Amino acid sequence: MTSSIVLQPIVDLYELGGFVVLILTALSVIAVSVVLLKLWQFLSEGVGRRRGSERAIEAWVRGEADQALLLAEKAHGPVAIVIASAIRGSIARDLPRQTVEEDVQRVATQRLHRLSRGLRLLEAIAQIAPLLGLFGTVLGMIEAFQAMQNAGADIDPSQLAGGIWVALLTTAVGLAVAMPAQLLTTWFDGRIDNERIAMETAIAAIFTRRVTDRASIARTQATEPREAAGMTGARLAPGE
Image (cartoon, rainbow, N blue to C red):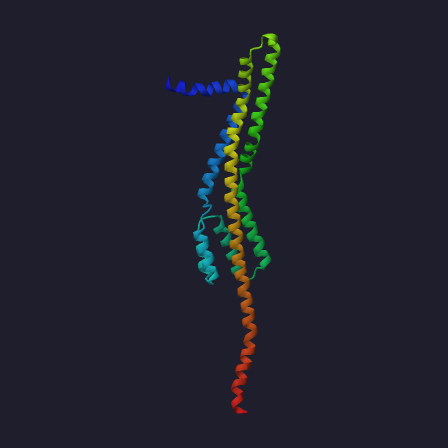
């Protein structure tokens, strides 16, 4: 008895809305499935976790390359994976800088693409649901005006009003599906943008430190002969 009371409004909704409501219901089920899968993916892959990555960068800036790589490999998240790739390339002195940067960029692109997979389907549902609801409303209005034409002079305004609100029902269902889908798509895109910015910042920090170290080494090697010459001159001065 209780189940029939609960299901009766749903059955009435399908009877009034027709096949359009059925299609919108199927789209809502797909949207919920995509949202749950993305939430599980973001949680399992550590999206938004920064502490381990920040510690790896701090160790790298201090010159502790091995410790930085260990921290990056132990950290959890897409940013940590990109940092580990950048550190490995920087440690491998035999690799050209351009090759390392291209490899790191490839890893970052793959991780971001993995995170954005499925969001286009959710965005498509958010776009098509209100249009589908409007399509159902147009069909309902056509049926209502056909009923007016058939009734002739015996038209009942209440019947017309009833046909119109039934027609508008599909638009309401379409908006109910589209609005949460659009909000969640925007939220997911925002999280992915944050990951992209964090990756770019981390890559810049690692490669900038690498260039600074090489420049420092070059300056040291250039000043060592001059310092040695100065010290030799100072030792020769007393014998003059």
